[in-house]
Image (cartoon, rainbow, N blue to C red; front, side, top):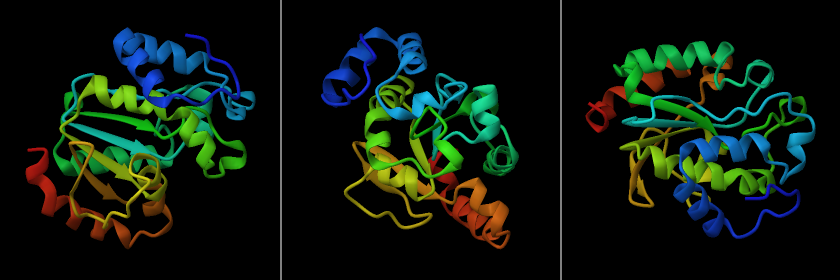
Length: 197
């Protein structure tokens, strides 16, 4: 599969080819991708981390500075809060996986643009298809806009999307800036534990 810039069309076809080729190919193709301008300023591609047989898949926004340097998602302050959240949820290491809507860091840590998200989406959809999580947790509004662009989910209220259960929770970065949201987030988790236990 060629990874050419400005050719972001044929999402279904791209997803199908990636899924048929398997997870290692998804990682390889995402690492080599030059389809959108984000690759020009990226140090490392940030593909994902965690179990390849997860109950729960978290989807975040985009890599930040630490992630761009290491190639590991949620590797900074927000990552420490994600770890606390995973612990509070009672998830073991083999129970979860985390990825972002885009695999390259946007300049100045800005939000990824709609066309950048769209360009990277085949990789995310292929990851979801191959990892086959029971539940997808969308961390914040950008993840929601990427995964279910046609609808607005309520915070902490599970919904069905593409045959899967999805749950929108606060992005760990939001908890850094608004500490009062931690208690609210924990109440969302408490109400929904049955989804992953």
